[in-house]
Length: 542
Image (cartoon, rainbow, N blue to C red; front, side, top):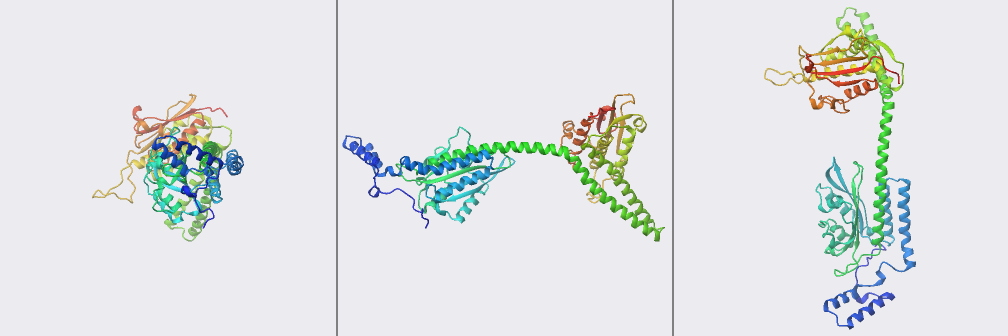
């Protein structure tokens, strides 16, 4: 048996030793009351007090005793304040709180029957279930199997009105600050949520729990969306009678510690929120600074591997051709491998464009038609080969305009818009069907004769700005989406990821220009979607 297993529950008057001087004073006062002509109900109440009161159980036992019992709580206060100053993790502060309370219970300094933490788990703001966190009990009276059963009841997915109101409590709602159990239901909808734990802790299955315990409870709310709100509940035995209930000496001290814990938790939670914001800000800065370099490095590594593989295949095919020079299959395969090598080499140029975002570079002078032709060469396989889409370009007008800007970044924008248009056209095509009208899942949708992308030059060689219109016959973008499509993560395509047009806008702004949606129908252009690019012919260096 635990050496602190004996709980000081109420005893009959005959075995209470009123040895304290104050007890004698109380007895004398009550005798004087009894000697007078007092109403029966007052006399009955006085007898109840005399039969239940003993100053040896009172909170204040004199300066010496108070200093001795308060030393542990003073150390506890110091520990919590040190945690705030050091910026310890909130969960660590909560664990230390429960550990301190458990030590006091083991040493017989605390009257607590048990303490537990209830967590509210939410997903997207919606309640999912409760979860049992840390828990301790007096001399381990509550068996682990019973804790497990209690935890399972919390996880059943139903919101308990008692816990719900505690979690939703505002600053003006009363705290459960050492309340006698029978009075809890007058403010909170208590429905016996912890009655079974009380019965287990005092080993009395026939007990009416509301007459047997006191309760303290605080709510620890978190500002962090990924962290649950928590309740801490501590139950204490009742040392009085139904008429005159009485809590133990440690309950008021531990209530003050709970209040201090809540202050520390809020402060550390606020600090954590600010830290998260700073980390996210630094992370965004880091991505903006290093992202293009990391992307260029990783893509460069993979492209080198791909290039080496293709070169190895070409050499192997060349050896086979020496033995079978007229084999049409080998000749065709060799031509495709050479095309793959050329396409891989072109992609290096796109990677270099991303890499150039990392460093200041000299402005280049070039003809607009040159970068347009380069973009068409890089996207030919995706646009004409895979999407079966024609590209119409006003080449003569494009080659008449000279530009001084960042050629590589402009190339990235043109490539993204061209590929985006080809993908939109392909996704909008009707899937093929058989004679019965059933979809042919393995077949690609047939291209339409009118599918095309147009690159129109709307500026003159002497203009200060270059204006391009890239239109396509893909689906029309709804008016409410025409600005949102430039937002990171937003897409109207089934297989889109919402990054391409966002990147284009960022790059155009970096080039001192802009990209906006332009309705080609309103301008009598035979297309359904369009993008207008405008930038200065002479960009000032940063």
